[in-house]
Image 1 (tube, one colour):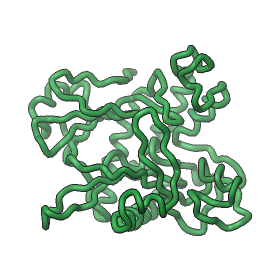
Image 2 (cartoon, helix red, strand yellow):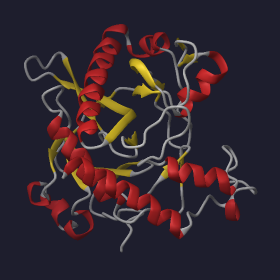
Image 3 (spheres, helix red, strand yellow):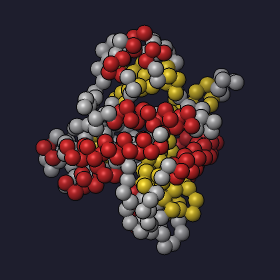
Image 4 (cartoon, helix red, strand yellow):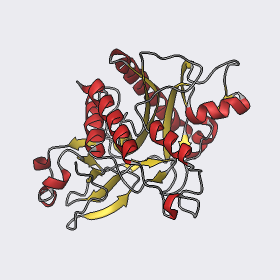
Length: 310
């Protein structure tokens, strides 16, 4: 099974290479080409080998959610059929089929819009220390993986490539982007999460938390004003924590359909943040995922996509 680590589109201009996506400009000035590679990252570090077909699975799930949640807020998606894209893109059909979105160009809001419905990950780590999540005071006596009384919006900074996102308080986030835009994003993110979580539950999945990204485009009604839209990926195992509903019990970690399986293996193998590329890093040049972990990760992604979309 083939794995696409780096896209190779020499006739297009690569403008950004993220942890997973390569973004190209095209002959259309108002649009971009998003290519989902099979790269995988953990703890903000890109691993040396990828997960076969992962980019296609992510694209399939993002397209599903963009369509399903389109009535809540507009998004940047325009086309996924290569034949509907500019001529210069079509020659790369073999490489791009199934892993590409032609999207509306937007001014990206510099905020990771995270919504949490359960106490897990960095939120659980903070709660154990201070009884807060992103500086928000939480009820006493909560346990790991417990469902929160209500979903909470917990923003973080959007770090540059290679840097780590930083959890911040709602007050700090509002200062960065302005209170009005913050309120818009918070409201949209909570509604998106609640709707998606309710649907996931009907498919036997708990959506514990997720990360949204937003952008601004000229308003169709008044181009002098800006309209908020969803950008990037949506509710994939890369940006979301999915757990099986069957067997769920608060009080400890849950089996997951996201990258936690890979993160757990990394930590068990000796990975520590800050040492991923140094002499204590495996092979001294970053980390190579063992083949059984590659297969296990792919199986988890594939199962999540099938449960949600079939």
